[in-house]
Image (cartoon, rainbow, N blue to C red; front, top):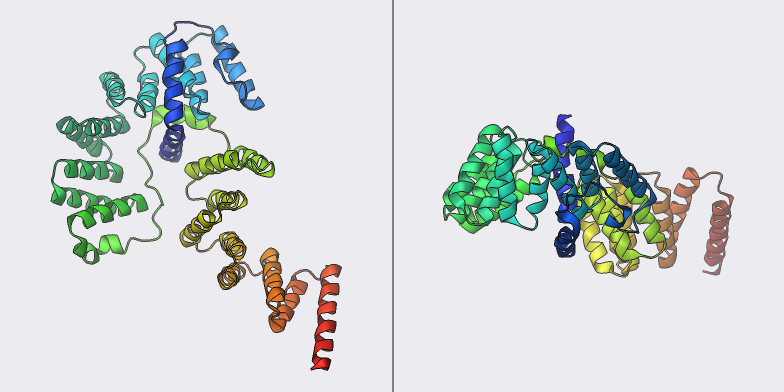
Length: 416
């Protein structure tokens, strides 16, 4: 359960963040339309028409539950389902109704605070204050409230809130990072760097904390970077992103998040129809959900390439290969993009790296064979044929191609 709590915050909030300005405008428009209504009936017209069939069925079941049992839990459950699928105006209305039915339950107010923080900091702080008046035991509330207070300039209040979060969380690296940023806002760069170095030394800190420390150090004194081994020698075993503070009131959303396989299948379907923009959006969603999985990033780069944005695709794959140096598929994809842009030496190097990591990678051996045939490198052509035949001894077509190659090579030698 603890791991579920730790992993969820980044997933849920990243989904909320991804909606952007358009969603914000829709949010307010929809709230004016029905968000403050006291209705106990949830109609199908409240939801978009183009939702996936499975989601429509889940929403229908949740609506039926509300009609049978119009409790805070029923309304909140539908709200959690809506958040998980980025139906934010509908979610806000459900949480508002749930908080009216159960005014002493901080869970639904907290859900509204998390959502409001993306569009209205003052309103979010009001919600966080209400939550704390009911329950002060969740450190994440103090942390998010402190960050929101800092962003509107209430620095003293922010410091107190973050100090409480730090005491409750055993000085969690994310809290120390927020404290360091607050120190910078207060003009105390020395104090900021002391805090961020302490955050880096924590085994819970990911590379995002290390990068923040480097930025603060460069602002303070660029020449001191080599004298900070805790930054320069950050171990590769660190997580890419620091695990967030536990969020017990957000677990219902986590349970309703679409499965990665479902999202990947939908992205693949869009890709097959050459709907590149839609496919890219889904792959980006996968990247946010599972930031330590190279497959989504690789698929995203391939989609960029297929959509004509080859330079950006290549840049992304270079980053993926650097971040995942043991991923043969990543090097295969980088090689394919390099071949596409005509950088043959780089493509060969990438393909060689892929087969070193995965010696039986047939597709890559075939790609190398093609390149060597185009370059007329007969010795390397023969070597690739022999590797492929060892991997595919029953491939008669391949055997015939090799025989033809040997015959042509023999005739060329006779002419010479």
